[in-house]
Image 1 (cartoon, rainbow, N blue to C red):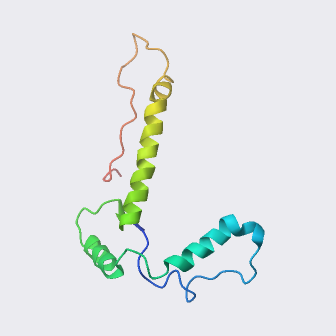
Image 2 (cartoon, rainbow, N blue to C red; image 1 turned 45 degrees about the horizontal axis):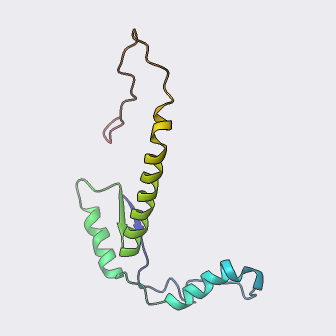
Image 3 (tube, rainbow, N blue to C red; image 1 turned 180 degrees about the horizontal axis):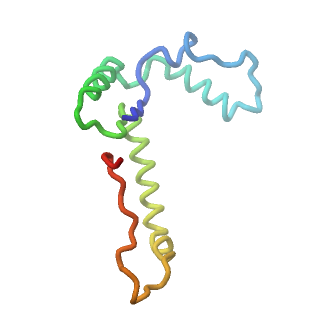
Length: 123
């Protein structure tokens, strides 16, 4: 299982874990400077409870049929959901073009030309 954690209330964003360069370059204020300020303002304010995350990961390890991916934390679930929504909207917008790439139908050809799906138990 690929665990995709969001922000959890740990020391990840404080000086004991996160290091920034000593020199601050004004030209980077909109990018790296923004991240630096964000981290300082969100340290120990994260919504995720690390004890709950640890328990969920342990429980996950005991499952007979665990998920391939697991988003943990409100922010992770929301961001991944938004990304999937965007990907689906783009797929839908371009679906007809994507599907138009096959050769024109040959009446003498075998109709079953789809690639078989791979299963987790294929070997």
